Length: 220
Image (cartoon, rainbow, N blue to C red):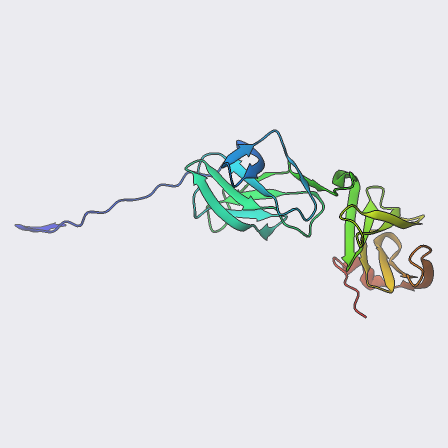
């Protein structure tokens, strides 16, 4: 700044951050520090990591997994950033990165997916619900729910299946009941799981509020 013969100077610098990009994404090994972009399949509850390589990535980059902030995010180098794969998720992952607070520069990638260790491919799953050692999967047809147990093994063991004539949109379970929401005819179906090997339909609830249901939770 100069005013006549008087002037002052303060050294400083500006940091220009590019719009982020995802040029490679895949498994990341924190020990070796290597990204394997050819491996994009993860296992359920395995505490694995993924990494992104691209321009415009730094410690201020916001990473979201299925619209939730990523956990354990860290920088590998000026072009690579890694994060922890969420444990309570199955299926295809939507990864988004952004540097702008309004997310105007956000880019997305859906190459990563999670499967069960038993070999059940997650991309064939519409949704899932879990309670203690029980895992219930709704397949991609939205007409079949299968209940598994992981009590004696990390590999899920099939216990029973429930077939539907209509598409199911949302599911939930507790230790005694399973609940299914069919938005097409505004119906909620409740199954008794007292005999986990042969679930029994005990109640049907028809209500217009079903159209507004986006998530359900069962509590005893």
